[in-house]
Length: 236
Image (tube, rainbow, N blue to C red; front, side, top):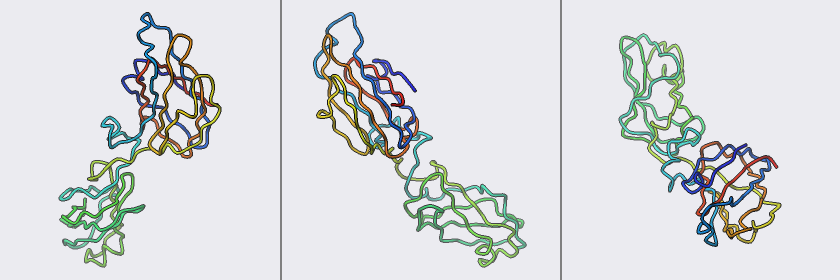
C-alpha cells in the first residue's frame, strides 16, 4: 500500500485503490517538526471523492461520466464498417447497452459503406461512458440498408457525453479506533469522511480501520489534511 507525506496531504493527493469488502488500516501520525508552531490544536483529515467540487477528479480515467450525448457529433464505429448494397440515410432512435435513452443517431451509406453515426439535436439522457450503442443488423436492413452485413456498434467515451463524472462511493464500515483518533469526531457520507484530531507535542497519532462496501478506484478521490499529518494505508 502507500505512505503519504504531510506536504502531499496539505495540498491534497490522489488516493490508491481500496477494494470493496477489504479492511484497511489508516495510520495517522504527526511527525516532529523544527517549529512547534505547526502544532496549532485541532487539525482535520478527510477523504473526498466529489467530482462536483474537485476539478482534478473530473476526467479521471477511473470515473464514469453520465449525461446526454453531445449534439452534432460523430460517433465512429468500434465494430468494422458496415457494407450495404444501397446508398441511403436513416435516423434511428437509440438506447445505451447499460443505460441511457431518448437519443437519435443518423447513419449514411456512401459508396455502399457506413463508417460512423451522427448524433442529431435529440441527444437523450442518462448515457454512461464505457457503454456502447448498437444498431442491429436487422434494424439496419429494415431501415433500407439492403444486405447490411453486420450490426453498427459505437463506443461511448467520456468526451462524447455532456454530463457529470460519477463520484466514487465511500459507503462502508469503521472499526478499531486507537489513541488520538476518536469515532465521535467522524463525519461520513457516500463521498468521503472527515474527522478532527488534536495536534500537540506527544499527540496527533492513531489508527482506524475502514472497509469500503464497493471498490474505490485509484485516483478517484483526494486525501487532504489541514495539519502536519502523515498517513499510511495498509491491509488490516
